Length: 218
Ligand SMILES: Cc1cc2nc3c(=O)[nH]c(=O)nc-3n(C[C@H](O)[C@H](O)[C@H](O)COP(=O)(O)O)c2cc1C
Image 1 (cartoon, rainbow, N blue to C red):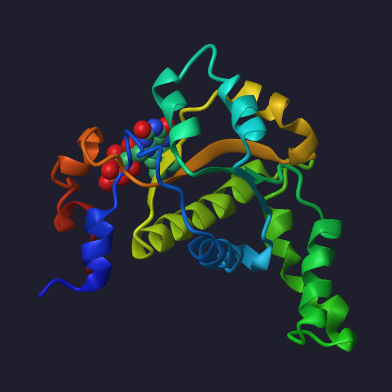
Image 2: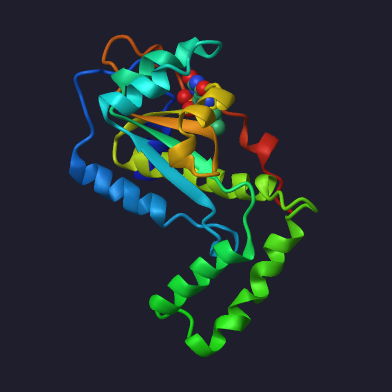
């Protein structure tokens, strides 16, 4: 018998057409958002912001960015239930990490006396910071971990989704600059339910490289 995790991950697929009549129930959204918040990141940096577009007004603003490219993803804007913008902090600093350390003290993971010592691991951020203070490669990698966690949780909740690098990054960041507040969005995620007839990808067999092509056991 196939394990339920493998079953769910085999069923999940990048939706190509959503059922516009179905929206994700609030109870599932609550689980999803909490699971996203619990995502792991290097030194617990959490250099991300998740901006959920669900109002007609927010979705209209996103739809207006599909003028030059990636028109194939436009239909998801209104047909899906929510679009989540995954954004990362391109200039992560010690001050940003101080927020993490102080939350660790509030959560009783760190003691006040150990506050300074808790900054020791900030070395990992330093090693990934350019001379101009650019941390993009590192913080973007953390944000993709959150995306991967999100895709898995969605599969387990039987909610369908489409990760989308197919967005006009310049226009999206311009349109949502107030909400992004200096963070950078390079990826969006549509969530909702696959159209029962028109989502061609739902009917295609799953295809991945063979085990021996991606694993080396030594
Ligand atoms: C980071 C990322 C960006 C993607 N961007 C798009 C996109 O813009 N539009 C789209 O239809 N699919 C997009 N995909 C879906 C991939 O093409 C898809 O996950 C891959 O072909 C494997 O197929 P499956 O997810 O259906 O198993 C993206 C996937 C990832 C992980």
